[in-house]
Length: 145
Figure 1 (cartoon, rainbow, N blue to C red):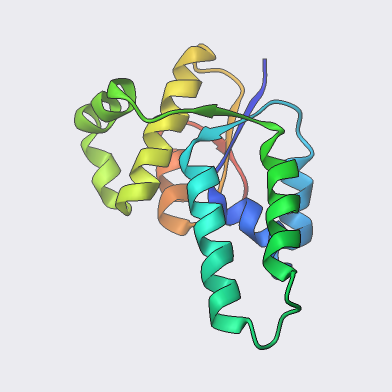
Figure 2: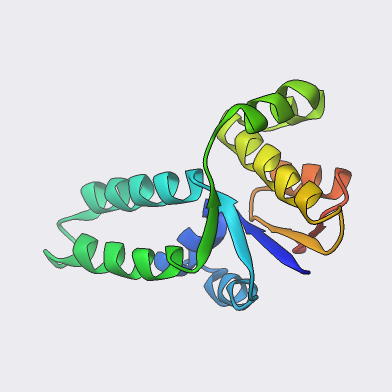
């Protein structure tokens, strides 16, 4: 079975209409989406920060509309909560120190899903270069940076 792990950079690209939005949307069209609960947390926090920094340039209901769209996307994702399994994965893989802490949590969660999927057909989509490099190191199929 093919699994597609997403970090927040891909969903935020879609929600914020960034340069790689079409590419991100193409990745999102895959069927079985998985992620860490961090996807939900990071996405709402970034949307709120963007709104606060630009609210004079946005309509009053911009954040409400974006949050509703975000929720529609997130309803399509199977989430893994942070627990001892993820903590143990980080502890055992020293290479995870190559990226930022939240990205390391994403990677440990993606590795958990990869193991559940018998290390086959597991994709990881990110626009973060360090995370992309680690994904390749761990044998994920991934997007091209």
